[in-house]
Image 1 (cartoon, rainbow, N blue to C red):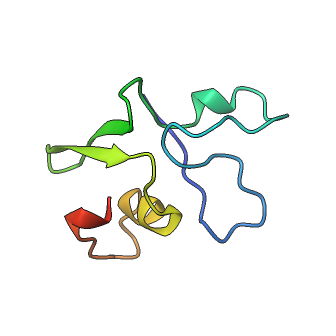
Image 2 (image 1 turned 180 degrees about the vertical axis):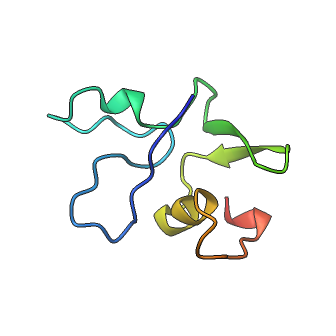
Image 3 (image 1 turned 45 degrees about the horizontal axis):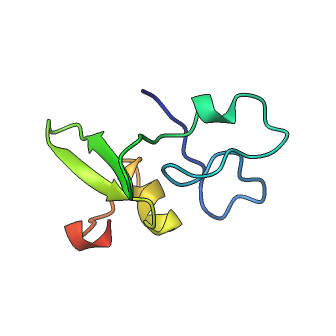
Length: 80
């Protein structure tokens, strides 16, 4: 699985939160959106080798921060 996450402040968001609705008119947006068939969220493998469950209701800013390392955010595990 692979996916693309857009900065939450972007004016055109082509890909959204995990298990989100594909964007109409965006060909194959399902191929770029991370998700799974698990109810309520998805399992994600992190670079440290851990696997964590990410809720579908995760905040967009938190979701972006989880998918980047260049901004060096510290994210509490109760945020996702």
